[in-house]
Every structure is written in C-alpha cells, then in structure tokens.
Length: 184
Image (tube, rainbow, N blue to C red):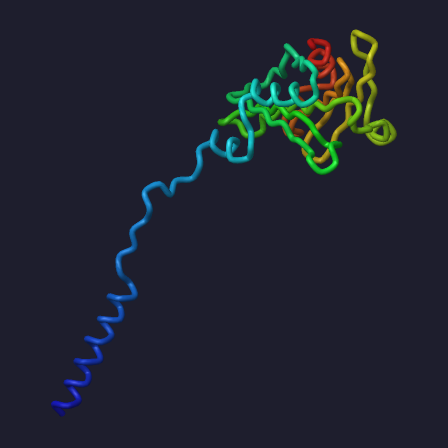
C-alpha cells in the first residue's frame, strides 16, 4: 500500500512539474503595438504630396498642377506616391490620396499620368458613363466603378483621374468634379 501511495505521489509531482514547464510565464515584447494610421500609409510607400509630385516631375520633366478646389467632405491627411513601372514604362503614375482618420468613407484620390501612357475610358460612355465639357473646352468622362466613382480628363499634357469613394459619392456629384477640374 505504501508503494501505491509513493507512486501516486510521484505521478502527481511529475504532472505538476510538466505543467510548470509547459505553462510558464510568457512575456510580450513591449513594442508589439500595431502601426499608427500614419505609419500604415508610410509602410505602403506613401510620402508627403510634395515629395511624390517632385519624383513624378523629375521623372517626366514636367510640371504638375493640382486642383485648387477639393470636395466638400472633410479630410485629416493627404499622402502621395509615385509609381514607377520599371518593367514596361507604361504604368508610371502619381497618386494623391486624401483620407479622414475618423471617417473611413471619406476617401478622395487624384491619379495623374502622362498622355503618352493614358488609359482609355471611352468604353465607359457606352456603359454608365456621361461626358462633360470643361471651361477650356476639354471633354471629361464621369463613370461609376466598383469602389470609386471617377472623373477623367486631360490637361497640361497629363491625364487626371479624380476618384471619390462610392459611399460618399452622393456628396460629391459630377458637377462638383467639373468645378474641381476647372480649378487647375
């Protein structure tokens, strides 16, 4: 009987030892915090608008003019990124993104590319698009897409594509886009 008690006691102690070894204290690394709102954009390659514009201008030897008018929705941050297509030299573009840290639906973007690499959107007129005329006589196309509604036009040897997140598109109408485009 004493042998059974000793075996039982040894088994209990052995089990406790295993539990202590397996379930020891785990210390978290103190800088294991998620990136801030701003850091997420930086990690994705976004920079200040000024730096991104300079990269685009230096690459294409041109001047970029941004619209002076913005949509009437609020933004807390603006970022820019120059995409350089090193493989084909066809998809080089500049993207300016306006966002609101507190209102995630407030997203507005401006994509700019040289006319020699412009995208063709004439087929959008046959679908759900509509054509508009700007003050200088230039034609623009407005169309709705999956996530954004777009307004595309050409000015100063560049193609501009203004986009508004479709969840706030009722606040930024095609007529608003005309005003924005005319402000360049």
